[in-house]
Length: 453
Image 1 (cartoon, rainbow, N blue to C red):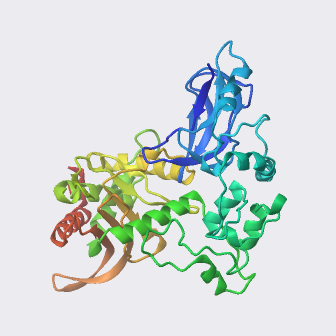
Image 2: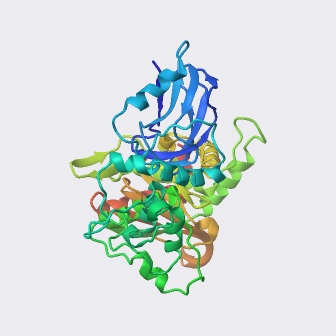
Image 3: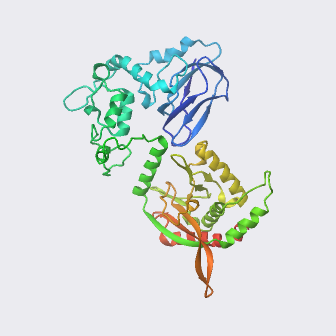
């Protein structure tokens, strides 16, 4: 019996993804462990391995397709002795109409994977050819209270939903007045035209964000271009809105003296082997990761996560570190950071940051964690307040170290001072608890030798 190849779930929370690239073709033989495709989630591109041995009988979802639902069928594999005719029988006998591509379509194709430049045009033409069949299979879809039927391609519907457009207000240029991609894009470029009255799906209930059309109407036509959001930017927006609307933030700031840390860093780096597996080059950020992890070890009540059913008191200390990449950011995790040496943290972070910039992190390398760090000191930012990354209860915002005059023992001296602000979820971390955590962190930063014992 033919074996279906399903869209894999690359993380516990993944519901859909983009089939970025096929690495096999129809008719090609594969064996277990072969890399057959690349899947993009909101942040990462992951390789998919074949589980079974056989011949690729058909590729049902073209590469480049977005919104492919987890566990939907994307290809068919034939075992030894099975014929291609058997592969098509399940689809032919199915009484249900195929879903649209943006809903996780698994429509068969009979040719090799086509170039990305022609896929959308072919999708529009294919959707037009299959319109009569879909009309016979599905009940009438009403566009408005007048009872008129709304004809629009699945691709046009998806784009309209993303842009916040009202399809019933758009004139179609396709066969029988059908709305196609070009019609939606034309409407999107017209300020104030065809805007949906409902709020975008990304906005939680109760918000009153200004509609796209009203925003665009404030600017002269032709003075801007619309750059559609990719999955990473949509996810960042959704999570940060969720964070600010559901987490009661408060902020604590402390100034840390860096002179001892900078001196220790210089001495340790001077003793590093020039090359080899034990070589390292410590950064100030490596000390910050270690210091926050040890502070959480000393103040375990702050190493927690809020849930409605109870407080999660974590037994491990996994510190996320924000890494800026083009179009967004990752927060890879240094797991068991309290148990690792500074050199281990340093080398691990270099590897994680490098793979993050290439979008090659696995979901388990950036999902979860118990706290996180956002360091903008290298950009010259003195201090800032960071937004908590759910489900964490804290995030440490780190500013630049600056030489400033300080008073010590009745005399004015020059010292290097770094400002750090701890954002706290007040449901988990009260003011006094947050102060204990931040003071413990400061103590390690100002006396770094304690991190070595």
